[in-house]
Image (cartoon, rainbow, N blue to C red):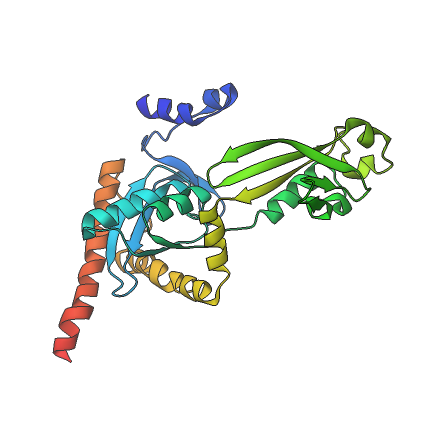
Length: 280
């Protein structure tokens, strides 16, 4: 019941809370998406690997299906093991969020990662609303002097408040309701009959610096090294040890199983680094 209440607490609606359930064989596991597209009770394993020697320097297990919240704990574990924060951390898009960019900047850790522009998501939202592509946000012209937008039909959208988010401020603009009602392009622009609105996002300086860095050749070169470094320990543990499915149940025991697998991997790397040169 304790684990069920934890799951219910994460649900937003009463219907979701009512339908919440946990695995009877392992109540501490959480339903997560699998590589085959299906869903099953799982744990989220995080492995931090040193890029130079390929040794595992941090490992953790969580009940979260998302990686966004796992970066800061991962850096904490590395700091605990090594006595200091890493100079640089390379992550994939699952860890790259504005919150994490701000957190790493505050700790003076050089974050390298992939972050989407959000363009495809915005286009998807417009399509679901029935908006014609000729009236997507990129078709609206921004006037920085007047702080307003001009729509493709020539109507003005004026400032209408702002929303503060971590690492970003969203400035909102809205058209006059009568302009939209009289517009011959209403069904293409705002088919839901509401006055058209648009959002202009402005990133925090730290986020802007991160995006600019990832556009450089050096940033892209470093990011390309992530795959061989980060994926090899996972592949080795699965292939050599056969740890594709946990044999134990419960967060603590699963953590112990992962820890032994990581220790085995590190011993193999230690032999490669220390013994083999002597044999040679």
